[in-house]
Every structure is written in structure tokens, then in C-alpha cells.
Image 1 (cartoon, helix red, strand yellow):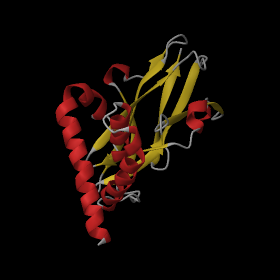
Image 2: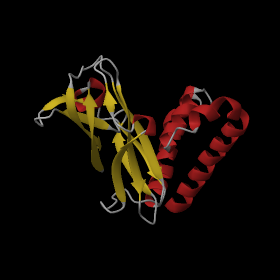
Image 3: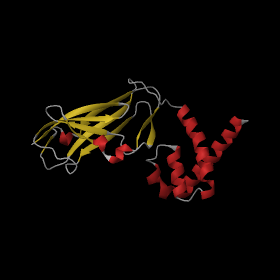
Image 4: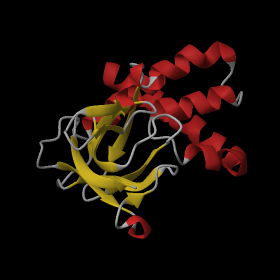
Length: 203
């Protein structure tokens, strides 16, 4: 009986999603194609007034049922062999040489699912990628994880399909911390899944 009730609830919420998409697609597509969770889509429907205020809690309950099903179809505990993290750079910044007055940009962190099934990855919102800068003596001179926005405990989840990759560009703003002339090691991390590094030169 409980299983039947859950199925009915899922069908009802799916019907809401479909009708909302059909009638509001031109307006919401640009916003929804970046939402990776059922909760994100529910929040969008609430903010647009598609889900009535008195139905908000019920919608969230139905979302929880769907999320439980979604997570059961993926693995949230991938092995180190399944998820790899690496750091590279845009080709136009291939030599990774900068002057003291320009931002350090061109670094790319790539997260790849090498496994045979999808994995659900979690990270802090706005802090999916953090980086640390070390000088030539290997002393830490800057830690992006110290930024106030990285102190949130709010999580964001998304599904990385088997064989898929996701790329994050990294830019260090000299307005936050100016680097003097020398060589610096950038350690770039996707917290909980791995990290890589690149050495840059500042003239």
C-alpha cells in the first residue's frame, strides 16, 4: 500500500513538472537547464508561483520521494578509480606566464567519471572548486577556501553520467591577493574527490 502511494505521488509531481514545462518552457528553460536536482526544479516552480503557497510543503515531500528514487539509481560513494580530477589550461595560456597586474586565468579543473554507471557528486554551493597558492619555498600564500562564501554548509548535488566530464575554469583575481614576481604552485581541488596542480610564473 505504501509503495502504491509513493508511486501515485511521483506520478502527480511528474505531471506538475510536465505541465509547468509545457506552459512555461520559453521562460524557464534558460534557468532549469542548469538545475541538477529535483529540489532545484521544485524551488523554481515555487518562485514562479506555479506551485501555490499552501502546496509548498506537500511539493517538497513529493520531491523527497523522487530524490530518494533518483539517488537509488546512482552511486553516491564512487571509488577513487571511478572519479578522477585533473588540472590543465586553456591553450592560449599554455606557458602560464603572467605579469603582476593581470589576473591568473586559464586554469581548468576537470572531473571525470571513469566508471560504468552514473555517480551523484556533492559539493558546497559556489565552492565546488577551491584552490591554494604556494610560493617557491612551498609556503601557503593564499587559500580560496578561506573566502566567506566557502564557509557555507549548503550542499549542491548533481549526477555525473558514466564516461562524462565536467570542467571548471579557475581565475585568481589579483585584487584579492597580488602575487609578486616569481613561480607559484596552484593546487586546485574538487573537495572530497581529488585535486591537481600547475605551476605559474609571474613576471
